Amino acid sequence: MMEILIWIGAFVSLMGLAGLIWCIRTVWKARKAGLEDDALRATIQKVVPVNSAALFLSVIGLMMVVLGIILG
Image 1 (cartoon, one colour):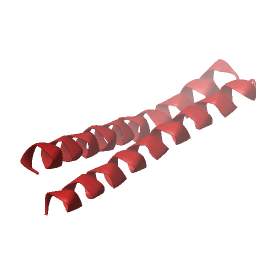
Image 2 (cartoon, helix red, strand yellow; image 1 turned 90 degrees about the horizontal axis):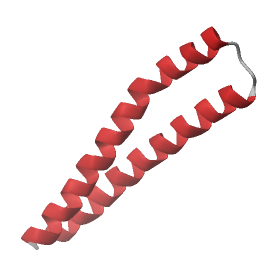
Image 3 (cartoon, helix red, strand yellow; image 1 turned 180 degrees about the horizontal axis):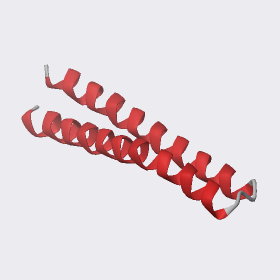
C-alpha cells in the first residue's frame, strides 16, 4: 500500500518539476526576446502563479514520498 503512495508522490513531484522547468523556459525566452521592461514584467507576473503552484506540487509530492517511506 505504501509503495503506491511513494509512486504517486514521485509522479506529483515530477509534475511540479515539469511546471518549474516550464516557468524557467518561459521567463528565459522572454528575456532573450529583448522585451521592454513593462512587457517583461507582465510575462513574469503571468508566470508567478504557475511557479507557486509547481513548487507546491513538488513539495507535496516529496512529502508523500517521505511519508510512504516512513510508514512502509
